[in-house]
Amino acid sequence: MPFPEPFYSWRPHPWHGVAAGPEPPEIVLAYVEITPFDLVKYEIDKVNGFLRVDRPQRTSAQPPSLYGFIPRTLCGRRVGAHTPGAKQGDGDPLDICVLSERPITAREILVKAKVIGGLAMLDGEDADDKIVAVLTSDFVWGEVDDLAQLPTVLVERLRHYFSTYKLLPNQTPTTIMPYDKHHAHLVVTAAMADYDELYGGPLAS
Image (spheres, rainbow, N blue to C red):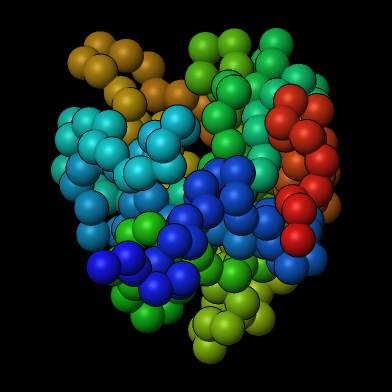
């Protein structure tokens, strides 16, 4: 017996089939790959859209926030131009960290987030920016409008995590420089343009 009509619908690919957000670059959607409770790094499979195990975390450090990417973005040449020393972007979707007061333990979900700043990071000669955002409906962090308004220790935790999460013995931690909301908006806009150049224009309705 054939399935009813709704069973023939397909889940959109999290990178290509979901809009970047309702009001990008200010308000974006974040697809969550990792939660603050994960000691394993999960990553989207770019071909099929499933979440896969990338690697166990080498250190005991856990992500300080939800971590994932903004759909329909790409770190290409435009993103690379915003990072001193970078020749290009790293070719991945634009990473994003989303702060939430209440624990969110689920992965493979979409959250609406307000962009407040970011972290400039180099992976070799590639830009590997981390946008920092707050959950739009959050009762504690939702009123934060810029990275400078966050507690210093929270920004330090984000910087420490990303400077050491790929670190091997005898390596020097990666230098990470925070930036403000205005610069973050430029990076998000650049990543959307890089995506459109490679994969095409706006999502069909």
